[in-house]
Image 1 (cartoon, rainbow, N blue to C red):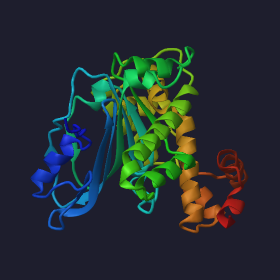
Image 2 (cartoon, rainbow, N blue to C red; image 1 turned 60 degrees about the vertical axis):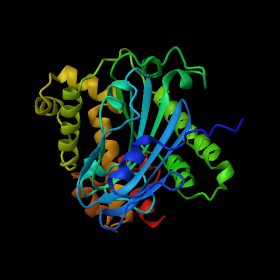
Image 3 (cartoon, helix red, strand yellow; image 1 turned 45 degrees about the vertical axis):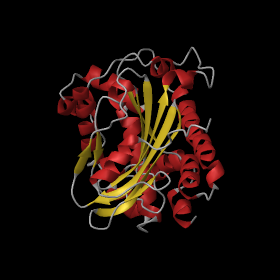
Length: 320
């Protein structure tokens, strides 16, 4: 009997290619010029883990139903956003939508929706079966975040800011030249490395209780985060953000920390220093201009805060 060929290309990409009047080649779809620019690639590594690389821009929005959806599966989604090398957008643009982050979501948020195929897409999506993931390591009983994520019995969402090592792994996924014989093996190892690194970060989060989420609360929290990022020169006030989100301060505080891993002020301060680093290094602004632009009236205090977050004083960082 002949060897049965294993399916390695996601059906959603086949549907996308059909809609554009083209076809997949080795798991890759290059967007025809009349429709836009860029490419998509997808790989089914085995029955438990798959990856989509979406780096393209379409001239018109298009939505494709995902034929691979399995509503009974307990799948965890790792969605890397704005992480492609050489295509970074300055934080001083649309801060909320261009920040390099990873979303980690349980089944309720990852497989119950259609995959939007729209403009300016720059993501890597890794879907992993929760039971398969549990078999790869011994989760700490003390980590409620990991326990809740791997149980996958209720809607949960976590967001993690990208840190430098993840860029290295992503770059290897996107640009490493690997022979076809080892390509799927290599990409699976790298995908699992990304997932492992993120789980190691999630385990560090302290949480006494996890709360099930709904789409309305998530939308409200992200709307409030966008409002906070739009005014980096003004420290956030919890009561005002909670009112903006339509929540009590207590509810806003606990859900914000659950999703983002920090209090709203700590998250704001962390992001404000990332913005300061961009202004110093990429836009070549002076230390004084950056400090005043970000709402600091005392430049000595700005220098101390920046050093605590970045590891160098602003002037040292701008020259590094």
